[in-house]
Length: 299
Image (cartoon, rainbow, N blue to C red; front, side, top):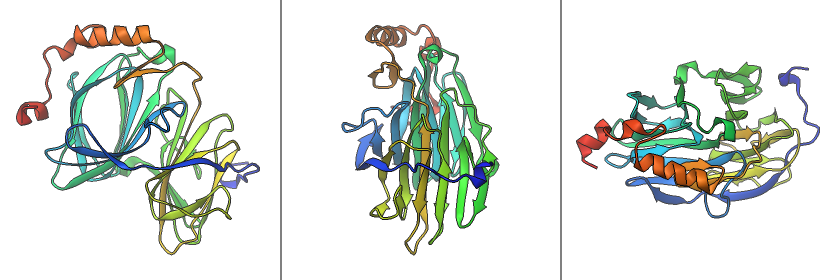
């Protein structure tokens, strides 16, 4: 049976939902944080989900990461990215950047154009054996992201597979990341591996998830899905519904986090702080480096 012929036997129901309210982050940026907040510190393997909104001169100036991956998916405008290895570029609307921080990255993410830049950033934890690997980037332009449409359902396949389309992204922590648009009256059935954790984040419109007798849920809500073999969703409204469906294989490991550092033990966090402060074990190039945006804005 192909994925397109898949019929859900055990639909995942919404087990918890939260409205992601705006908060300040970085320098003058506003984020709606749904994972990584007080009520939901961690949803294995996901550490953070931010829907961000940033207008120059606000942004995310030079900052470090270790022990996980960041996935940036732009919705509007563009962000310029630059790191201490000399990797730089611009992530425009619809583009994807999948960054494996591994043993250490220091980078900046700043607005690349006038007006408000909007996007999503997801932090995915790495298993203990992958936390100290070399940093790596996987980047896909909007025009190269696989898309499919069937019966009023359109999907962009960021990671994983949907409607017969597979993403080329390699996910060290097995992950699916799908951007769906449902036209009014349409119905979606999407398989999800039974052992994975999964959630929906609503970007636009309102939809019914899990059980068609449940109440519609509107934008900026995160929905944690219970057990089952897939998601069912309906758009019974008169406007289009847009949401992301993200799932991942739980790592089942201890998590110790100190801001942008995520390891398994407090000792590893202490060592990471020591490495960062002493420019060692992956942070050597941080001693001499400042981003062009930091130099021009004099942060």
